[in-house]
Image 1 (cartoon, one colour):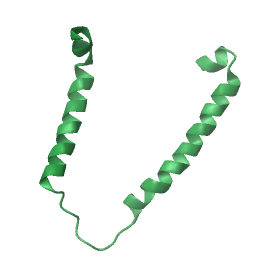
Image 2: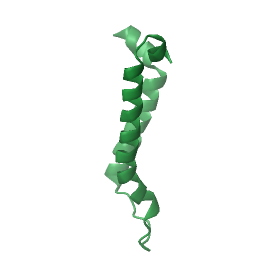
Image 3: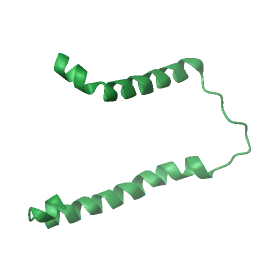
Image 4: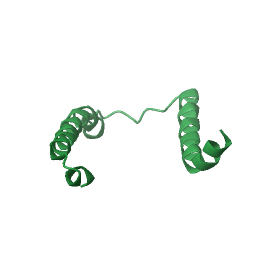
Length: 74
């Protein structure tokens, strides 16, 4: 709405079109992960890969919560 209020309706329309195109692009890659069933058992993640993924997720959450403190310290 801020773009429309600023007189940039063409940019808002372009952004909406871009968003719709990207949704179709990413769903093309994501949908098969949730719809295909192979009849196989669930794969067991390897321990180092799982540790890296969990550590990265935890650091992302902690940095997101404590971003104010980190930015004032820098």
